[in-house]
Image (tube, rainbow, N blue to C red):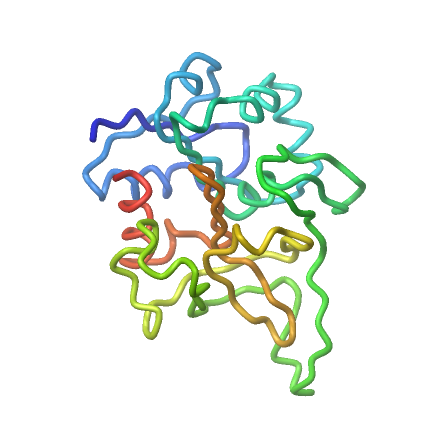
Length: 213
């Protein structure tokens, strides 16, 4: 399959490490904030680190918010990574209430847990390597092809997560103490990864390769 891939450059995210990871799969990719480039892409990567509110406002100021919200995702794919995944949802209460792209149902809220183990191993932000737990309905799904859920670990760094989402969109999750944290979500050709695949070694490269195939 011929791909025309783009990393959306709106001033946040690990653009060049993501670019390097994509190129490692044998695919080419450009980094751009041009409307024409994004509109013509077959595969869109929306990275992000930092504040949901700031990211949302920046996309609006750059005239990219409505563009990403209204693209025809029957004919193209998008992968949101970390904050980029959170932007796919309807809203967030980080800093102040702000709207997301509403491509997937759900809201972004700060992680809350009870530390039931009483050993303070669970902290905010959540930073570290975790194994994913796959939703049985998605066993055999193309995006997770060749992943080893018994051994593969993925790198997370975040303080917020998706809540009130449609369980039908949940591909995989982690449990952070007593809190379920969506790790991979999917609605048609719209994908979200709460972790950083570009920092998750061979397993992350496999995910990117699956997305681009």
